[in-house]
Image (cartoon, rainbow, N blue to C red; front, side, top):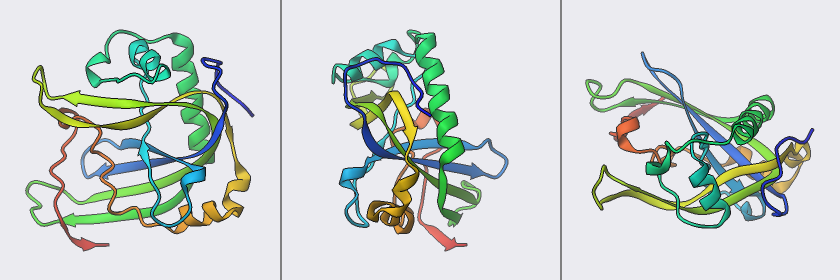
Length: 203
């Protein structure tokens, strides 16, 4: 099944979408999305970038399509209902076809500040159109940049690639270690607690 709407003349490519589901005791489940181009998966150390799921900003979407810089500060100008529907279909396709590849449970040095944390990592091979752009987040109204870097945004034409798991890249994705990925670092600290410290026990 192919879902999505045509937004660019960009040719679809193959990617792997990673979902990091983080659960802290007494708090809601958090989901963070990252993405890798299949052609870049050649060994156990391959590049991945944040996948920016933005359902509230046409400005960010249009800027990404134009390969312009986007920002969290643009998150409140409104989004097209067709694109919101596309994102929901994309997330549903991801959830139906993703594969669990790693689970990390962690205890922290200072348990008064951090409760035990569990992170489950899923991978979803997908063919589709994504735009790539540069994201900058400045703290408050200041010029201090909290984070910046290249991100992807989903566009259209998504379909699951079941044959991916039989390829060499699929085996690499299954056996790579994701414990050292700071998957929260492209989310503003005001939206989540980023006081991550070295674990004392890995369950």
